[in-house]
Length: 529
Image (cartoon, rainbow, N blue to C red; front, side, top):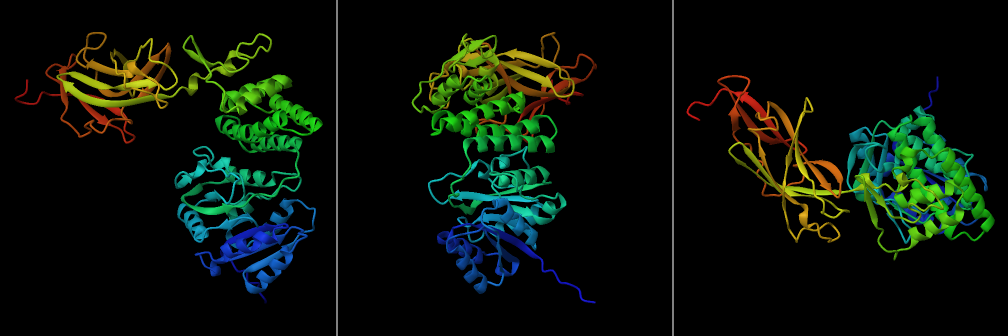
């Protein structure tokens, strides 16, 4: 009986080619020269109906390199058809999809396959780099990430298919490029792979893929809006309602819908096309955009979307122009009732009537803080440092130190003393002179006149200025002079609940650097008062 032998290799590179003969040789050369070795590599090049010399270049390369296979798809079919044909032919344990204008760095596949094998990753992102003036997403490549997913990182913000996919995962989940999409089939495929992956790894310490400029898309503005609707529906079908879905939705609302509507409002050459796109966008915003996803977007974009959803095209155009103005003046803030509102256009405009919640940026306030000294004076814990809001002045100060017991939630609040420092500034160089504090925390006498009881007491700083408050943990950000060496317990006071014993306090830091004080009960050490 004859048994067919199927050769399995490590990685398949699927290259889609359409009228890119001038760039194809460089692409193929970057694949042939991979450090992983040609014995671990196969290349599948699909000519997507080219009318230039791409076919001849591929035929010559196929004759030269036995590990290169060719396919031909009729001109006029979608890019998805070419990619799906390549996917049906894959023999590698992993597959990566490239365009003929892309190139791989010499050790790209070796790095990516090693990451996939070592970390048991279903998808590996290799760091992207632009080959010219066009831009590529980079926020997800700031460091290596052996174990991550769409919740813990920015990987979902890169939805091009130039990733290393585990072939068995694609087959198990029945993934393919949708052939009914005019644009964005690569987004739909990559998004589904990310969502379905058990683990995603990122190679961020070296460039792996050099991206060429994508061919001009024939899609119009309305097609780009339709892509957003399709992607939101795809996420809805695969991710339960909640923060995870909101985060993925926010990517499509900001990246695709934000850009498409800005173009329709400011730079569209066809008024009819722009109008169609804007009304389609308004429908998406009314029916598919959820409050949780909108809350994750920049406030300027949220206001523009709210205007579009109401059909206020002229006002939305004004808002888009405001966003695009690089020389616009600083936006003033309004602080009321412990909330901060940004004074963007149309804030409390009676003719428009947008709700204040759209302009609420309280949760976006950034706290800068540092613990700079920690020492003891008997049972008195002495703390020095600073804490302030980057975006608010340091007037109307009401900052406190809060000790909170880890198990019970019991807490003790302690006032701090202001220390004026005219050299203290925020990241933009604006004065935050009253941001320094000193605290004297008497552990021997709480608010009810008793010593701090036994437990693990976490140390928080409740930063409060202009009526706005935010708690942060003291310790993770600390000056180099702060002594973190383990010390002997500090005696607080005789235990009021157990005669002949005493309470002692021991400061320590968690693995993430957070300051805690452990209060425990013990018999007095002989020879000590």
